[in-house]
Amino acid sequence: MAKTRIRIGITSARELEIEIEDAGEFIKSMEAGRTDGSIVWVEDFKGHRHGIVADRVAFIEVQSEDDGSGVGFTAD
Image (cartoon, rainbow, N blue to C red; front, side, top):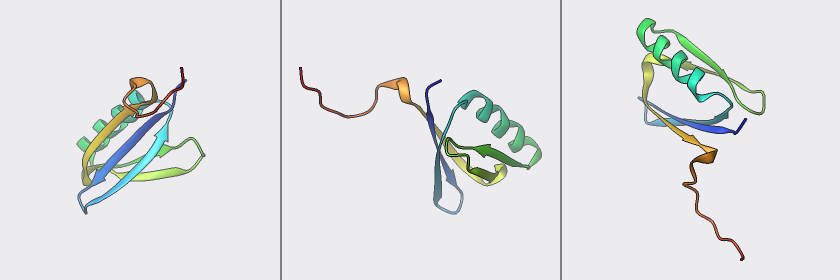
């Protein structure tokens, strides 16, 4: 499964950027957390767990490794 990078803006003008496997599951967890004001726990590729207070999140940007938006050069 491809890595997915998640960048989260917190209302205190800070961001948390992590790489996870399942963006869909993360989004569902954040949507549920926003409705009940809970802490959403997510584990990154390195095994670190991050607790996110869902009602403090200002935005979520999801960028798949497969989306081809990176900049690079190749030799033909």
